[in-house]
Amino acid sequence: MKDTARPAEPAIEARSLGLTFQTADGPVHALRDVTLTIGRGDFVSFIGPSGCGKTTFLRSVAALEHPTEGSLTVNGMAPDAARLARAFGYVFQAAGLYPWRTIAGNIRLPLEIMGFPRAEQDERVARVLDLVELGGFGTKFPWQLSGGMQQRASIARALAFDADILLMDEPFGALDEIVRDRLNEELLNLWSRTGKTIGFVTHSIPEAVYLSTRIVVMSPRPGRITDVIDSPLPRERPLGIRDTPEFLAISQRVREGLRAGHSYDV
Image (cartoon, rainbow, N blue to C red; front, side):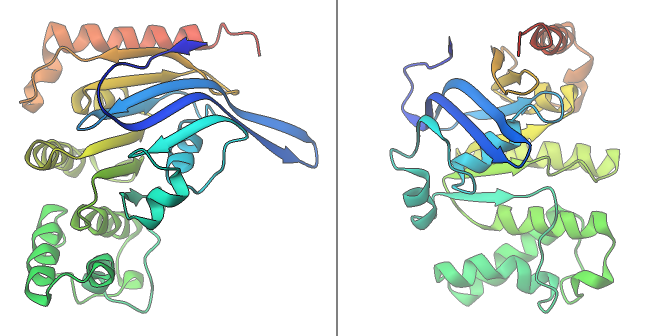
């Protein structure tokens, strides 16, 4: 077992976590022996090959999957209790917008549920629409937008929701490089201003290195942790930092961790 815990006050804590799905073809071991502590205010990216369990881990934190071994807490609570306490917001790979609500209405929904005053709802909706370059599209319906624009609206909805923890499952994968770079920068700015704890799934090594204070590298199924990298990069990170020797050295370590994962006996 790879113990990657550290003594920070935990926002998310997994101990010997395992998850096995029972299927008609037999059991599928999605996660095995995952031990990890994510401190409050950390920005942690999960990276690994498709099917390695990184999304399964994030979904377990969000109480969308239920581990079959070990323990998992979110803000000191079981994930189901944390969900009821609205401890986290979640951005899925698919936009998941309600077709009968406008884009602004979709973004506004969690704010309505939480009882924010109408004026504050309006301000938050307008701000995040501009952030994801959808200013002027608030009165449109999801079916009037492209798939990429719908996903940007989903990101805006999660950013408007002021939870302590933000869980993001490849939220920028469908965006073009220019918008993706801008949203990477804005997400770092948001994290710096709010001190949120962010769990972020990605397939992109540069994105993981650019965004994170810690990078969790995972092996092919059954998902295990092959490396946890504490980033030495400063919190202030212009896009140009991606060309520095420090950035390239971290990227190389991530690649080595991904290669090492394939050497595990399954």
